[in-house]
Image (cartoon, rainbow, N blue to C red; front, side, top):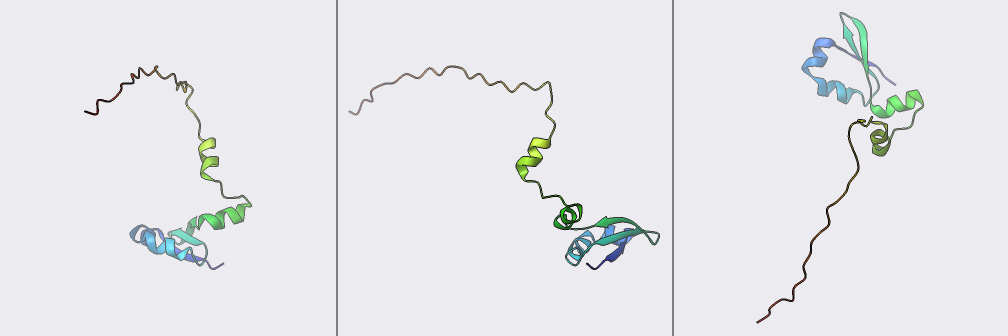
Length: 88
């Protein structure tokens, strides 16, 4: 896994180049010559942490639901009147 470095200024000016560089490995963003952030592909992150990539359903289930939101649904009765069509 190769590590590339971008200064904070270069990263701000050209984020897409830094994102493309993650194909070869981690990218360090430096501030005054010292690494301050690491940028890597999400697949690499999950591999490093030993986690599996969550599905969209897992992410949605993890979102907090507001307590004051009522989820009860009570539809009104439909008043449907059937009529025989006049075909003449």
